[in-house]
Length: 293
Image (tube, rainbow, N blue to C red):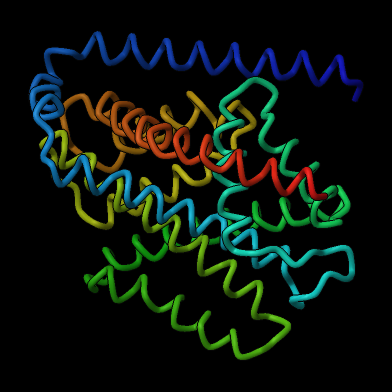
């Protein structure tokens, strides 16, 4: 595929995202009367919600960062095309590239590949391999959380106990040196999905609608997979509609689609609130590393 074709595809992606967001806005506007309870509640957020949501988002991004670092740091030495990357370095890189991914052309993904090649000596092919591994891990843990939530509900077992079982099993696998990086990467991504569920649970509470932990996990599983939709900034527009549709299937709230759309838009806003200041701060660190590289 030529550079011109890729550029056209990116433009098409942005057009689709804008149309989907426009449709989301129209849907919310048409159900405005049914959403009066949620709107009134959002206008008077609790201090706990305002503090907890950005903090949880920050921890989740830290989990994503550590997951990538474990995959890149396999064997803990700079050989076989992989590099030895410090925890703080990976965190700031995720923050900077996360901010840049809001720009056209997904500049963050391209920038991360270039950075690893120049600073850590990791070829682009190895970065692509790690990216594909990370995608497989995310889909796997999202489906696992999704299925465990369904199983917990069907068997009437405490969902926290059921969700904790994979973590225990994965921790046991860390004793194997070859499996350790992958086990830690999976655990971190699994925690990221659970933290997304926690954010949805808080956001629906912010709208004065209570959802069960199982419902929050089902939304998080769907949202995690939807973030892989090949649209700008993590499935912008597409993920919102996926959450809206899933909310309409698993809840009995009035205007459930609109509530799901609002919930994910709030989640996007929280992401921006965290990523922009940390991304701007991390630019100084990344530039210093690049100048030395």
